[in-house]
Amino acid sequence: MNLRHKNTYGKSDKKIYHVLLSISLTLFIILIAVKLTLVFKPLYYYDINSLEIENKSGYSKEEIVKNYDYMVEYLLSYNNENKEFELPTIKFSQHGKEHFEDVKRIFVTIDILLLISLIINIIGINIYYKEKKFQYIKYTARTLIILPSILVSIFIIDFDTSFIIFHKLFFNNDYWIFNKVTDPVIKILPQEFFMHAAFMVLIIIILFSVAFKIIYKKIEKRNYFTTIGL
Image 1 (cartoon, rainbow, N blue to C red):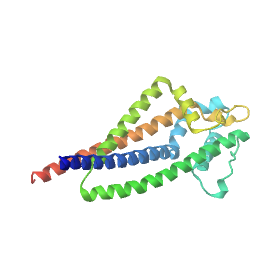
Image 2 (image 1 turned 90 degrees about the horizontal axis):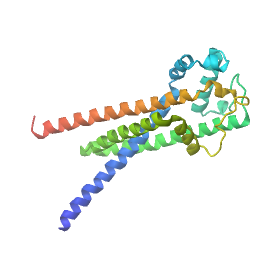
Image 3 (image 1 turned 120 degrees about the horizontal axis):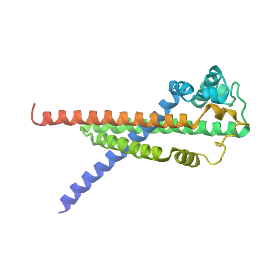
Image 4 (image 1 turned 30 degrees about the horizontal axis):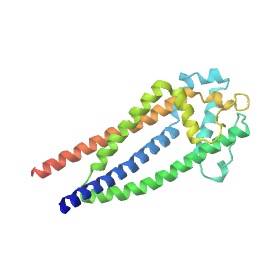
């Protein structure tokens, strides 16, 4: 009886470690998807035309691109030269500046979490590779497909509300509510663009989920043929 309980506990304990590793992998992939979307400038360049940003904002395409490129580079940079936020040609308020500084702090946090989760993933994957245990891949694939499915449903139902809730969760002020007079940069950052960016993040996550599912199936198939001696 005691032995049975011990074995059950052991299996349960091992499953927990697989789940924890899958959570770390899931976090890593989500953050990677966010960073990839930020650096993928062609998405915004496409939206300049598709959303008619040039006509609606009153700025030329060259000026729009120049200021958008600066914003992306500012959020990605860590050197002292680009530490102070200052758009090339579009005026901004102190609150607008502070909002971009808040966004930059979020991306710094993202990079820290990426590093931590990467270390955990490398250690965990290495351990389970030696043990020939790969359940964490299955768990990760499932999590990565469930999460986007829920978020897509929410976005389709009411993206406006989702957009507001997101900002209230991640920012402790209302500086993200830009005034077109004091912060005309909002004219070149329509909400539709952020919706497209959100869907790009979800698509990347789904692709990772599919990849993980394919990898797990191939591993299972290989292990099956190894077991029967083929």
